Image 1: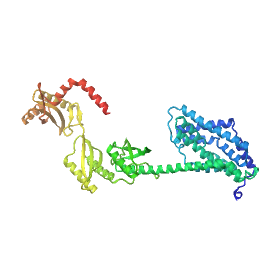
Image 2 (image 1 turned 120 degrees about the horizontal axis):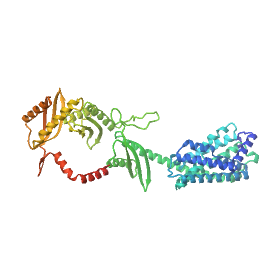
Image 3 (image 1 turned 180 degrees about the vertical axis):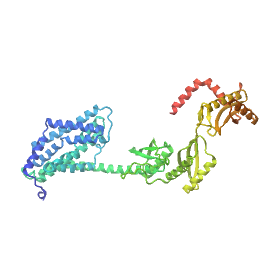
Image 4 (image 1 turned 135 degrees about the vertical axis):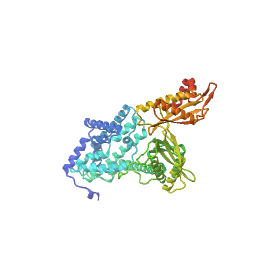
Length: 564
């Protein structure tokens, strides 16, 4: 029956194939030279994680030809060819592993690359690739019309890279990785040997030495077949383990993604996991505009344990990042999908609420002077949700402004229970004259003559209050309205400053500078009393600080260094 499956190949082609195999299986100088070259190329490609370089090593590797030599020798009972091919293959394997070991030992701080790791865990798919590649290689060899396809077969079988990787793993003490890499080579070796033998037999190359009997077949191919079955069984088990691990990985990733989806501008970049002493340890690298708190990590960890049915310990490695568009910072950017889209089409309801509220607040603040929305968080309490808006600026929102914003948000979200909480971070603007009260100050369009008037006025004011004794001028802001000068004076002390005194001061300054001046005194009954008399807080602080400046400076520098 099997004879009917044989395909005809001319005797001339048989002779050509046999001669090519005998020459390629010769363990001579050219053979070892190509083994050395291909191993070095493969090793450098693995170390540098270059797929193109590794492909180059596959193309020049000579180790597939001795396997064809063994296959041809087994079906024809050619002992000399078998011995020569085995010697060439063993010598080539030892040389490749040894050269990989030496190169790995000479490479400083050798780090595993994805190309190296990919060859340490073979599975059944690798064996199937070797089976079909072995058939393609042997068939292309006997069919003269397909011989140009041999370079592609060499790339598919990948004989030398696993051996080079074995040596590299040995050089860093990674014995499990070395075993996996060598197993990948061995699976390729057995697959090519058996499939090439069958291909040569079907091509009629056995006829010159008679037909094969069942006893001959078992004696010659029994050991390789048993090895192939054992390797296939082991790789099937590793494939099952890989599938189980992939399912667990997908479950972990799905749970983490679902939990992170409720946090604006937050997503997972990478995740690794491992079992140790019965516990599942997960490390998730997450980008977010905020650092995760232990409470947030605990909540996600409990969710993982519940869904997976495993005792889980989660570690979140936060990377500060934010996806910002012209409409805010709550957009959910994702890794581009196969259709090229990079914005999540499904936004978590809480993120959608936060995004809508952020737009309302940002639109309102855009018309306000000196206010900027930093971020908006949605806080989930037991019975309600609270929007926490962080606003930076030079003034705080009034209670009425917050009430109106809250009402607008409630109407937009159709949620009358939504509450708005504002966390205000104030800024103080200062110049050479002190704190700038933006409502009372002029920051632009001031001529040099007007600046001179301001300086002269401040000199008069300083003189006035320095002679007062019970009132201290701490700050003065100047503004020009309709050509008139307006000054806001911040005064502290034990006494008051009457309206009559203000009018006298206005007349005095207006006369000296020749411009109409309006004075507004912001009086605050604040002062520091000591045995030396009365002083403003600023003056008392300055005096006291000078007494301990040297020691205090060292202490505060140490505290600030520890906070960085």
